[in-house]
Every structure is written in C-alpha cells, then in structure tokens.
Length: 361
Image (cartoon, rainbow, N blue to C red; front, side):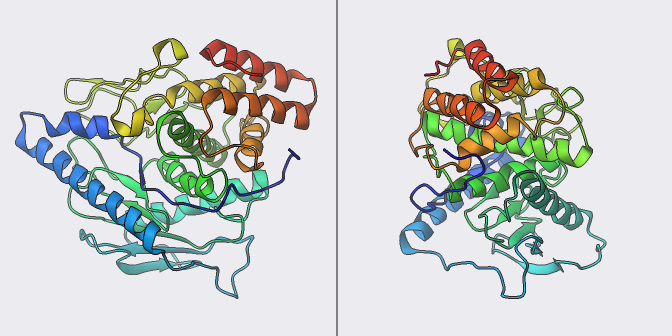
C-alpha cells in the first residue's frame, strides 16, 4: 500500500445507515409512556421503509450524480432542502452553495456541518468530497414528524428533528453529520459489508472521522477532545452524555428509558447477536477504543497521525469488504510502518490493538 493512494474496492454499493442504533429505538418502543413509544415505533417503521427503498434502488440502479461542470472539486457544493415534516425527498430547496444563512437554524447547522466534513477530508487528506471527485453534498432537514434519527441513504443526508423528549435536533452534534457522511466515504472506498465485524468496522470508521471532524472544527488536541459521539443530542430528561463514548465504551448513557450503553471496549466482552445487523453499532466500541488509545498515546491533533493511518487503510485498496477486526488491525500496523517507519506511531498502534484484545499479524 502506498500512503495517500486512494482506491475503490469493487465499486460502491450504498447501504442505509442511521446514527441511532435499533436497540435504542427498540427499547423506547416498549416504553409504557405511549408518547415515547409511538415516536420510536414510527421511527423504526420509517427506517425499515427507507432501508427497503435503498435496497430496491441499489438493484434497479440510481441515477449517477456528478458535480456540475462549473463546480471546483476543491470547493464544497452544498444544497440544503426542507422536507417540511414529510417523507418525500429531497424536499424544497432552502439554501445553496454560497447563499447567506437563512432564519432556519437547523438548515444553517446542516450547511455548516457538510462544509466542516468537506474541509476535514480536503485539508487533512486531500480528498475532494466524499467520493474523492467533488461529489455535491445534499441534505434534507425537518424530515417526518418526531423522527428520532439521521441517516445517509447512499445519495444524501437526512435529518430528523427528534421528538424533544428523548432526542433533540439531529443537526446539533457536528460529529453526527460527519459520521453519516463518512458512511459515504466508506461506500466509495472499502465498501465494507454492513453486517457483523465488517459492519462494526463500517460504523467505527464513521465514529472515528465524525469525532475527528468535530475536533478539527474546534481546533482540539486528542487530550482536549471529549471523544463522545452525539453529545448534545440527548434531551435533558435522559441520564446520559451521548450515543457512544470512544474513550470509555459502555458509559455514554445509563437511563431508565434507554437502558445502559451496551458497547464493549475489548474483545473479552464482544457481543454476539443477530439484531442490529449482527451488532454493528455495539461491537464498533472495540475498534473505536483502539483508535482513541492510538490518538491519545501520540497526542497532538488526532487527525494528523492516528487519523492518517486509519484513512490510509480505508482508502488504500487492501481493506476487503468482509474484513474482520484482525484484518483491519493488521492493515493499520502496515500503514503505520509504511508512513511513519518504526517510530512511536507503530508502537502506539500495536499496543492499542493488544489492549483491546485484537490480534495483529
């Protein structure tokens, strides 16, 4: 693998990826409070519909999206739409690239989040948009009523407003925006299968770069970052800080409504389940924690060394669609050695995977 080289892995096969795991919505759907349960059930039903629609679109074939001839690949090309609490996408256009901010704070946050994601990938990794070729970035806000999720559907971003009881507006955490758009990056590169360990790696990569986008925007070092995914998303009544913690998986929330964060930090607690596509949002805690350990061991800005290693693996062409944790870990070792030789970076990678119980070769 040559550091910095970007390859694809057999073309893109988009999947429907949401930021809120099904196990959280399942728990809410069984709550005795009918208002909480109804919003969760409705969200689950809408997610199931969109997931099926995504599969049908993949089979039938979606229209190819290309940047306009006038668009520069090193500049974002953003369009924000308002679904007006409906489900027909994309909705009514409310802001285009270069337009002044409007009165809708949600639309403005979505616009800014798309820009921050574009900037991190361009400035840190010389990647021109999520496909590497200047793909326009579209997002729809105010999707459905009381919709408790945000998703990447293979073509665009979609944000719900939340129900106000458990979840707030999904454009609030910039790392949620970065997380979902990174599913697009994975779609155009390694194209990891969305099930089991490959699916957990898919989710973990979105958490990693979602966190890096937040850190880059805030100018934070690894030591200053909170390493939380979705901080600010949970309503005040919820006992919790975020959806996930990369620093301490399993501690993001412990709530009488949501239950306890089930993420493991090491392979000793790996969860075997048939739900959530084989636990993709659960076992992602293991590679998440490995990245946190590498980043904090190296210090400084996490996107510069730890992030570069992870990006080299994601885009280098050697990460197979069905990769297991051990495969990914071994590639990070190779990438660290190729880019940084036998220095501290390599030792940090080796030690991190050892700490989370993942073997490297």
